[in-house]
Length: 284
Image (tube, rainbow, N blue to C red):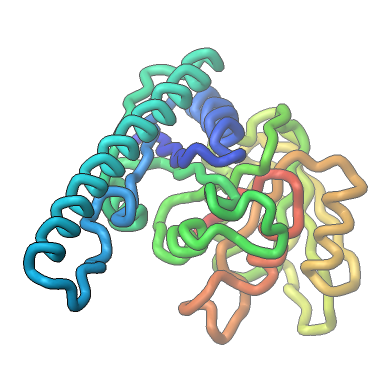
């Protein structure tokens, strides 16, 4: 089994938090860390052809100028990328993480993650990217793409980090939720933490003995877990409890019972990641 965590940093307001969350997880797993920054095609590719219907001499001069501008932009992007990775590596190492290996890549972020995913135990990413720091109703597009495609657990870091002691598991009895329980029961990450399984009953159907089975599986692994059931709409009820009861981490299956779960992240999952101000751990 691989024991490596991938931290994705982009220089946004979430990057420092990504590093602290990664260090916390890596410490509990005694894992090594790869930290990656990916330069997008806009930062490294050729610029748009604006030569239009110019005469030959003018067009050649403009193309030469655009080419020089592209080269300058690419150099600056690489310099910025290396600086982002250097800062991330320092934060991780100051938190006691090691070894830390930086990676500066070019191209598409999802493609870069897919290349290294077979060697990963988990991925840590910020809730929003560099271009959406204050868009409270919007998730980073890269986060959504990776959440749909990734086969390993993914931690969605909140804007700031605080020590994690109290965990809320959003439980709906779905195969994804049961998989989350299975993974939690075998992970050192949850040792010594206070775990609450919460089922929000919105009248769509009972989950039978699955809640009791989930608690029993966690307790058999030596973890401390309790079960709660409340009525309401899942996204609203979960958001309210997170806001008022001092939880530090939400654990969810990436998909619930949704007819379109193969196309998008489950609706409750999306709403929770958008709404809560604490990290969210997604299991597939």
